Length: 421
Image (cartoon, rainbow, N blue to C red):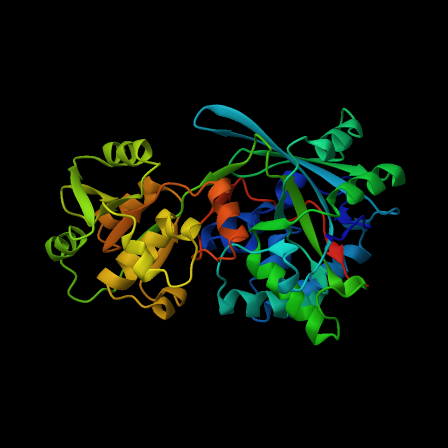
C-alpha cells in the first residue's frame, strides 16, 4: 500500500522574504546563468541550499539552512499538514491549472510495484544529491508522483479545504504562478491518505532524488518500506486525470561524432524510415505532430533542409527490443535511442548514459539555433511522450530512456521543505 503522511513543513517567513524572490526551479534545471540570477535576487534564495556556489557546496548549504532557521527566515509549522499546491500557467495561448498536494511518501522496495519509476537514472546526479542530503538531512525538492483517480475524489476533498487566499503565492521566471495552502484537518487528512492507500504511484519527475532518498535510508539502516522518518521523502502528488497535466518533448543535440556525414546518415535511415525533406523547422514540427499516431522523428544537421523520419515498419523494433514490451517498442524515444543512436550511429547504451555525445534541450527553436550556429552537430526533434504511453510502458515493467518526459511546469524548490529528525 502507498504510505502517505502529513508533516510539519518548513517554509519561508513571509514577513521577511518575498516568495517570488526565493523559490527556484529544481536543481537540475538551474543553468549557470539562472543560478547567478537567483543569487542576485535574494540572499535567501533556495539556490543557496540546492546549488550553492561555494567550494564545498554541501557544508555551505547546511550552514545557510541552520542560519536561516536560527534567524527566523525559515519557520517550521506547528501542526502536521498536507499542502495543496496549484500551478497556473499558459501554454500556446491556453491558460491551465495543475492541482496537486505535497506530503511525505513512504519509500518502497521496487519489487513491491507501489512506486513505479519510468526513466533510467545517471550516477553523477545521485552522488551529488546524496552528499547534500548527508550534510543537511533535508529534502528541499519534491518528487513528482502521479496517481489514478478518474472520479477525482481526492481533488474534491482538497478543493473543499481551500481558503480564498493561499498561504503562499510565487511567480517563477517563466511567469507561472504557484500557490500553496496548508491543510491541517485530521479527518480530511485521514480521508485523503485512505483513498491513496491502494494506489500505485508513478514517478513523473525526480527519479534521481527518489533513488537518493532510498540510498540515504539504506546507509542509515532503514530499508525501503521501513516505518520510521528515514523511510519517507517529500513529494507532490497529482492526479493522472488532471486536465492541467502537460508533457513537453525533450530534443537531443549531438556533438563529437567523428566523420559524421549527413548524406550517409540519411541513406542508412532510408533502410528503416521514409525520409521526407522540409524547408523549415515549423513545417517539420507540424508534420511530426500530424503523425503522432506513427513513430515520427525530426532531424537537422545545419544543412539547408530539415528531415522528417517516419518508421515504415514498427516490427523492426522487435528484433532490437529484447524482452521489452510492445508499449516500449512504440515509443518515439525508444526508437530514437535504440534504432537510430545505437544501431545506425553506433552510440552504445553506455555512451548514451554517460552523455558523451548527447545534450538534452527543451525547446526546438533553441536546439535549431545551436546547430545552425555550429555549436552542435545535429539535432533530433521529438513529439512529446504522453502520460498514457508512459503509464502503459511502466505497467508492462519497462524503463524508458533518460529524459523521455518533461512535465511542465516543474515543481518549484522552496515552497516547502522536509527536515529529517
